[in-house]
Length: 251
Image (cartoon, rainbow, N blue to C red; front, side, top):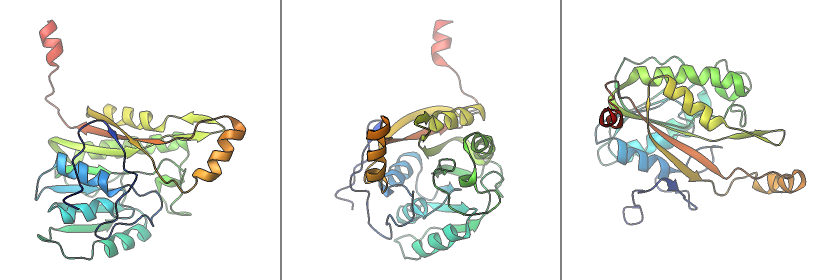
């Protein structure tokens, strides 16, 4: 793994081989590539930092934290995700950092103000994939507009718990309804900026090997629409003392 991994250096990321080292696999539907988590963790945190993933899902972020000597808190509202993540993180690593996995709600985190060094998370794309049938507070049950109301609460909580000058990284994609794109990614981005975050990067990630591609390919040909083949990685920075240097120069 050390030989083949290289830190990404531009704003287009593509991982045809999604990565299966350690306990990573693609069994949890919708989980993101460990290459994404590894890049984020190595670039935006340092060893022994505390990383948060409040949509922990299949545990990708926490596995990479354990492998790269970051302490981590993994939260999910779904007990199934908690069980999977516990299993995935049940291995010994060189440093064995502190990995905490717990049930919780991303809209109301049981965490202290400014206690987190990095947020690396991958929320659901509204109700495009529903991860439970009836769990109260599960964002994957919400339609587009209701999801945006909830994600605004998530953004405010992210801002509250993150330390000053630290980074919050969100992996999110768009959806489609009745043949029309719903720009979920940019709507989510605006909610995080409204919460107070500054935009550090917008990264485009190519999607590969989507399970439903064959089904949707025939639909796209029949109804004349393009397949969504990218996601966004939004990198935000909590920088309350931000100064616009360009404005000062103009002044």
